[in-house]
Length: 145
Image 1: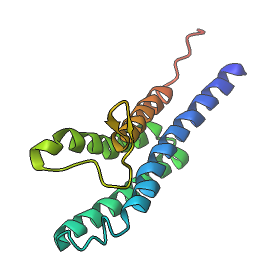
Image 2 (image 1 turned 45 degrees about the vertical axis):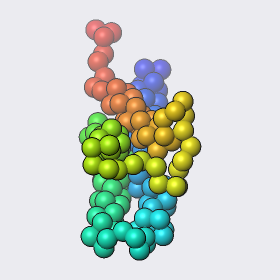
Image 3 (image 1 turned 90 degrees about the horizontal axis):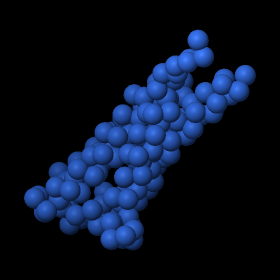
Image 4 (image 1 turned 30 degrees about the vertical axis):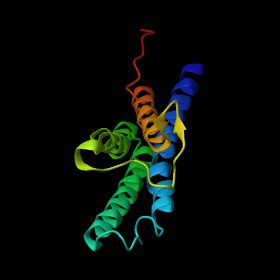
């Protein structure tokens, strides 16, 4: 019986990791970016604002898909990979920022952890939690036989 409880606890923890990631990119980030510094920034070209809204709506849709996959289809692995794609993209954009003149600093989240911008830390945590969810949701092997 305890093996069943352990397996259920691992599945719940994996789903919670996915859910945390989705909350970051489908709720917190839109909250931080639907304001005059981003979506309603008159200094941004209209096409750049279109890309911002496109990115936000795409991430919200992917977040809903990830939640559906994790909680209703029990496809935590695929949901975790969606989280890696979305928040891993933040890390890639941050690493490449000097090459295209970008910056992860926006005025919304300026804190740093050990010299690493807070937004990059949060993205890294989401990616690590997605990796943990992948590990926790791997197929169970019964070695008792």
